[in-house]
Image 1: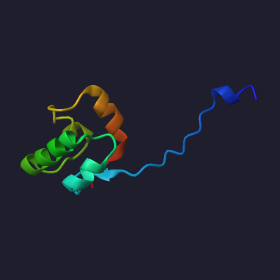
Image 2: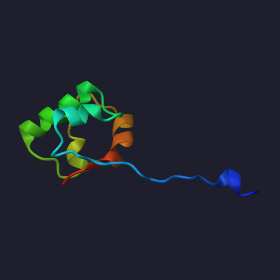
Image 3: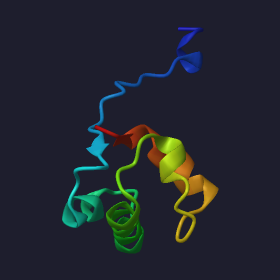
Image 4: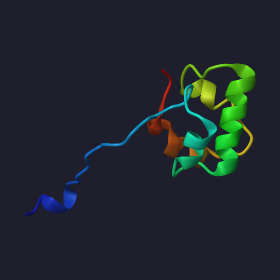
Length: 79
């Protein structure tokens, strides 16, 4: 009982989005992406090629703040 306030339960279960294969509509459905941000990510990928890792995603400057990147990082995969 004493340790209970110091414990945190987390299943860690969430579905990653395949950033290089996702359609614009799929990106727009992500709860942490606005329609505008999804469009930016999609268009950037179309113009510059596939994302290789999170560093390559963060090259997209327009429309994103540091807080956005921190929240989004665990949800992206680069397959």
